[in-house]
Image (cartoon, rainbow, N blue to C red; front, side, top):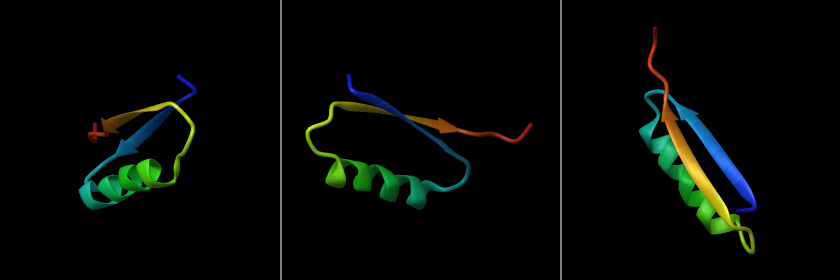
Length: 42
């Protein structure tokens, strides 16, 4: 694994989806993993 990507989101489904799509589209020759954390207000 070359890199781990951690996305923290709260009520941003469309933005999160676009971000993940962009990572897959523009990341070449790098092995990566994506973690999506949904933040909840305390």
